[in-house]
Image (cartoon, rainbow, N blue to C red; front, side, top):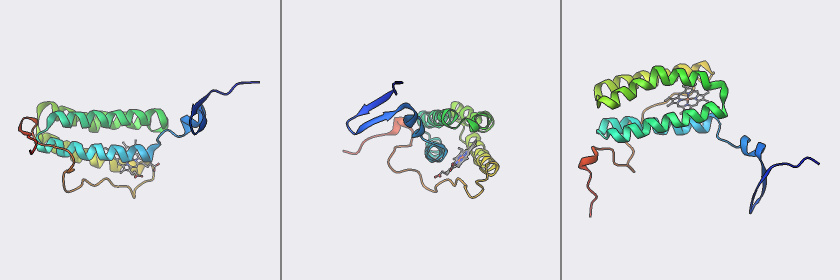
Length: 147
Ligand code: HEM
């Protein structure tokens, strides 16, 4: 009899196929991407450029997961990264806020294009009006923890 490969936990057994099926799909990954993309904006605006780079890298890392779990979007992800995200990285490297802001606007418009393409015209990323409050997003040298 063929033996199924299973992982065993204290709750029971799970097959490799089941493990594959429960990997995050597009909606879950997009939710994460939109958060990283939001943090990215305010990190750059606050002048925390290493944080902006970190958020940028995390955005790309999630997009790379999309390419594995939802390969039908892989080519468009690649194109989006090349045309809309890499200008953000260039601006981060140069600590160029004005350039960053202009490229960010275009990247948001780019997301509208792809949401339209896949029949999700009702999905529109909107930049929150305030920075996230649980992370310091100013210049790293100026941080001091209140005693
Ligand atoms: C930084 C750029 C992007 C942002 C901020 C963004 C944001 C979002 C958000 C907020 C959602 C709704 C998630 C939810 O259900 O809660 C979403 C869904 C979606 N996005 Fe994006 N998106 C971006 C780029 C893209 C690109 C480049 C593509 C195509 C390659 C894409 C394709 C989709 C699709 C197909 C869905 C629907 C997923 C589903 O419900 O199955 N998005 N996106």
